[in-house]
Image (cartoon, rainbow, N blue to C red; front, top):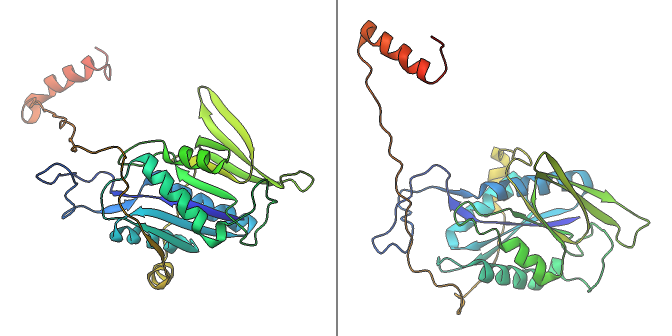
Length: 275
């Protein structure tokens, strides 16, 4: 089976975010970047599926030239091909991003397929499964995967924490995806025919670390590029605004043995100790 995984370059989780003076960009001089965590899990899930069922994993990103680093990270994990939709670095809204991805899928040779149901196969005849992160770690839009599915006419399930592919040779559709999503007090279980779009959540698996040979191979691997122009008539970004910093304070209870009574009192107030 052939799987496309869409990933995004985002600031590393836990890093301090600073803005440029005009508040329209993130100051990247001292920032580090990574694959959005949900999407890193999507890459890992795609690799596991192809290891069990055969096929290929293609990773795609939309972003500036430096976003190629994240594609190479995914290839170092084991992805077979990479597609880079190169932009000028401006932020694209979810609708613009989804349209660009759909156009790229239509233009990519491996994704050209006749309309209507397609039998499950692993011969490069098209993308059988499209995986997205449930939401990007920076913008948290929750929209791109759903918009792509709607444009392609594919079924879509979001927020998945478990995924299996089942062969059904006697069916008109020869493979289905069995998906599980956490719900209050249990699980929601979905079965959808391929081709399909699925968005996964962090925790569906534990992504592997790239090996040294994998990094060396990824460094030399070609990346297919398509240069995009900033679209018009999208959502206009006015400025970024950082959330207020969360303050904290500490209380000095005393020094040495003289602080013990006050410490015991505090523990009693919190129910750790009983009088």
